[in-house]
Amino acid sequence: MSLDWQQLNQEVTALLKEARQRVLEKMQAPLTVDEKTGRKDLVTNVDKGNEQFLITGIRRIDPEAKVLGEEGFGDHLTDVKGRVWIVDPIDGTMNFVKQQDNFAIMIGIYQDGVGQLGYVYDVMNDALYHGGPQLDGVWANQELIAAPANLALRDGLIGASGPLVIHDVAHMQAIIHASAGMRIYGSAGIEMINVMRGKTLGYISHLKPWDFAAGQVLLNTLGVRVSTIDGQPLNMLSSNLVLVATEKAQRDILQIEEDDVSL
Amino acid sequence: MSLDWQQLNQEVTALLKEARQRVLEKMQAPLTVDEKTGRKDLVTNVDKGNEQFLITGIRRIDPEAKVLGEEGFGDHLTDVKGRVWIVDPIDGTMNFVKQQDNFAIMIGIYQDGVGQLGYVYDVMNDALYHGGPQLDGVWANQELIAAPANLALRDGLIGASGPLVIHDVAHMQAIIHASAGMRIYGSAGIEMINVMRGKTLGYISHLKPWDFAAGQVLLNTLGVRVSTIDGQPLNMLSSNLVLVATEKAQRDILQIEEDDVSL
Image (cartoon, rainbow over all chains, first blue to last red; front, side):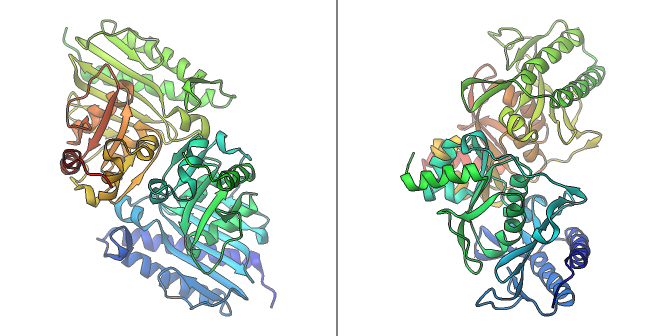
């Protein structure tokens, strides 16, 4: 079956806009917040409800596809053959709970493990980043966005995850020291938007497939590298220590890893 | 002389709006960027030009006052007697240079060392936070804002400065561990706006008077504590290791300092 990707894009966009409205409405009532692995790993009624809503919509749009969702309402995948939709109903749940801001709804669409379309929706700013090879570009709502400048590590800011910095995993502190400074925004989706916009030149964090699937498609389309911290392709079915970086900054960071530099 | 604070507020607001327009216009041309103490401590032609513009305006509005400015175009102060205006023409210069976003123009007005009015202007969002005891409240543009919830440390996110985290100054890592997580936004003004908005419950950083003067007035007006990391009043003429926190979180953090807890 050959897909009409333009048509599919319109349907996904409509689905996400409806999902956003529902999330905004649910934010008017108190959230039900539960801990997953601990008090810093949260899930709410909105994460769960939104995943169910999105998966129902995806089944309607693309009944043949498999769906991988953060909260477990999708399929159990053992491989990435065929068309796979990867869904994060609320990325940055801690921000969602504590800030009611700086979180994203994300969908990545892959074919045999290759990214086709990505959607990262900054809910509170109503900014839907979407695109990929099937659309020949990346848009912020209606605006086609340009590739960020190919900055070297020393010339830009880098996004990070707090625990990696504190425990100095994978020479994080040396990488930050070599950059112009670190920023921490608390949501993979928001961090990846910042890279697309050239506000940071990269981002390093331990991420699950639903955290990086959508952003990887968009970033690659803009020429930004997404790999493991060792420069290898990401495993789409497990956790990865993810390095997002401009081409030059990726080279600089891989060199720090190779040299095994500590601060 | 008794001041008409309402009148003065209107004049300062008009001055800041004009300053913002000038900054936005200058951002259309390439910046001239110089290093101050090193490659991570920058100053631009816009910092300098805006401080000169602001100080000229302040001299017109309040000719009797003393002015302390980050870039040195004000007076040399040896005490804080009388009325003192403290000016940061561009707070978050690294963000200004690298992101063209997430920076602030700030003015604090003090009388004999006591805060009277504060102005923190988020330039790119056109959001002017202003107020203080002389206005009986804090406004974001025309909107009177409510005091943030008095959260305990474990119940909220905390803003931090990167170097303090990496070098674990003043038990930063234990404080972060005890919180719900850290965020790093890279501008004292933007961090303080986040505390006013309840998006973070506090902020810890090494700051100069122009970095905290305006925010301190606004935060105190909202019941948020601003002190040294030991709970002492800030020295208005020197650097301080500044702790901004809700009343409960301040108590929690001072206890960590007292217990001398390390991770």
